[in-house]
Length: 316
Ligand SMILES: Nc1ncnc2c1ncn2[C@@H]1O[C@H](COP(=O)(O)OP(=O)(O)O)[C@@H](O)[C@H]1O
Ligand SMILES: [Mg+2]
Image 1 (tube, rainbow, N blue to C red):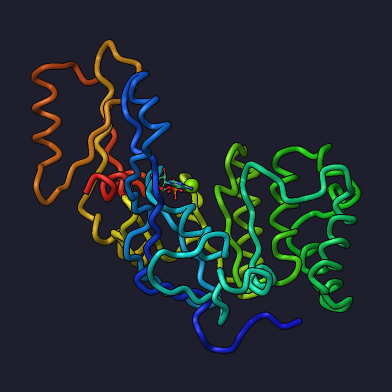
Image 2: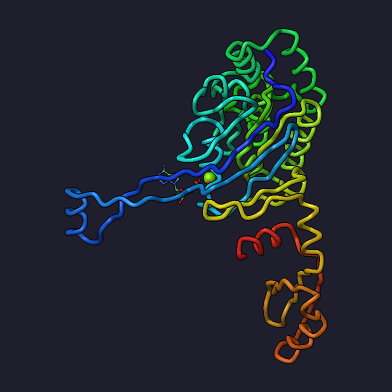
């Protein structure tokens, strides 16, 4: 089964909006009683006029603060929700008109809940997925071969998912999502709760699969380490609107004159941190100013981190 349509982009969204009707709750007991009889609805625009094109094999970070509209976007691309306005095309398929066909060409991983059969050994889950998605025997064998080249499969292959560590489960979930060689994989907080070493393993696995299978990856995460390791491009939404769409390199250049000034003041255990634009503020002057009021025990000047860059963008 070939799911990779030729040259068109993996995802095209054109002026997509999604509105929800939500109840305008009135206050107090009398308000609640009034709500029972006459409901006063307002419209909430969760996604507002978003246009986005994602090419084949791209890994993009889809970022934004809580409530920005990330999940709503993903639900529309996966066909769970229909847009209120605009058009979506996923690998040549209109997702909300053809959910079944769309589900054959996508894979999903939600960091906190497993898609796998809890009490089955992993290999049995793989076999089931092979049957569900009609993966040909040769492709299946090649895929397992690829998995073996990327991770140590033996310790997990015959283990039921419920006996796995969180790291092993995450690894298994990612392998399962790629098993039918989907054109697009959605990863929602894939490294949440994992230790540094496991995070790094998971990131390497995602990079390896993306490189070998040319899978398009849409990543939503609050972990800027994920973004640094995986994404060449980031798209940022806030209050439903797309506010940034460009390469990570571009972001870093744009914020190239920003520094994080960290100072440890006498009598305080924590570092005091300030982000400074060197084009506007002299770091030395900042230090002198602080020194007039506090004794400084230690100073570090660092490049601005991805985390702080994203925070700056959220703040406008
Ligand atoms: N089914 C729904 N009904 C009403 N409001 C919703 C629904 N789903 C999401 N919302 C609202 O839409 C906005 C965007 O939510 P969401 O897409 O989940 O944001 P994110 O994933 O970026 O945190 C939020 O204000 C949220 O409360
Ligand atoms: Mg969400």
